[in-house]
Image 1 (cartoon, one colour):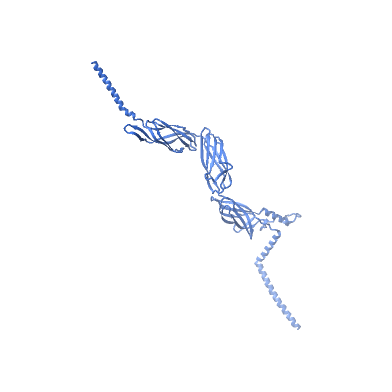
Image 2 (tube, helix red, strand yellow):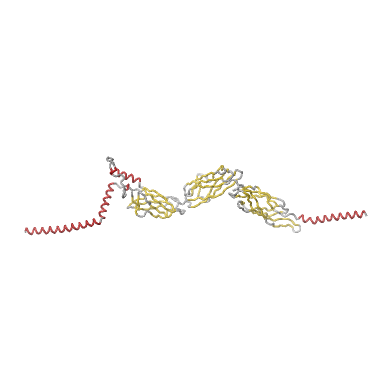
Length: 464
């Protein structure tokens, strides 16, 4: 009886053990199924950036699953102030279960980005791979995963090219070009390297290269850098772009690069030379030459109103277009109104009644004064109006010495007599009276001659 009870208990224990084993066998396939691959970004270094930073960021990528992950691709998107420099995609061929890998990207922070926290969006696609006893090797495409990588932007050094002092460039002429660089951030700057370039090679520095080194700029301070530049003598007039680059180190250990542009104008104006060409028959000729480096369009030469000279007829002459190096001749009916040239109505600089007795010869003094005034007052003002190569209408004023000689007193008296003779012959009333007198005299002469002949015959007849 006791033996039977013992056997029954042993049987129960064996059955219970077999039941446990059976349950474990049933549970075994569930545990061997593993955990799906799951790609996460577990760490980011560094996370603090400055405006203008272009910094390498290290990402720790982890597979938080037991299955292998393959064909892992990260696609980084731009945000308001953050962007990835270079390729916006990172590819990892495979990552085993529970393993991790470090990848690097270069992040750029926009200039002037305000202080605060900003995120960089990124998406991830991958496949998971595992082996199945019944199905063999299995590859499954997993759903796309999205992340936000958060960065803290600090307000550090901010550089500003606050002023560009540049007169209009003239082709072939040296011009001063000055840049004012200001630190408007909250961190001092050191070891700055400033440079500029013209992609077309039209504007180039002279006496130095295009790079300037600046040792230090404190917070709120400004530094001016100066260049001497020349535009190509054959440069077309217009607006040219200069690319500016500024590399620097911040006092808090950061560094950055500022890239910007500025426009400079190569002027379209030109220059003129005006000389006295000659004078004859009342016509005064001037030679007008374009001595600048740009063409001049719709050129007009004018003689403005002035004290010494007067123009009879038109005071403007339309020339047309003058290319650089071209010249033309213009003529005007020019007369002098100055006493030194004996102009009409000119005042006598030395009236006889104002000279004290015994002070020398009055006529000699007048001649000397006329010659001296002629040398001082023979400058003719000339205006040249033209349209430059940029379409701007411009005016250039030139002073031209006119080589006219003052008349002597004898010449003046002869000229006065000629005018008197001309005025007599031009007087029709006087001419009529002279004609009547001549005719009356002729008739009187004829009658007188007839009477004398009659008296002579009568006297002869009486004698006979």
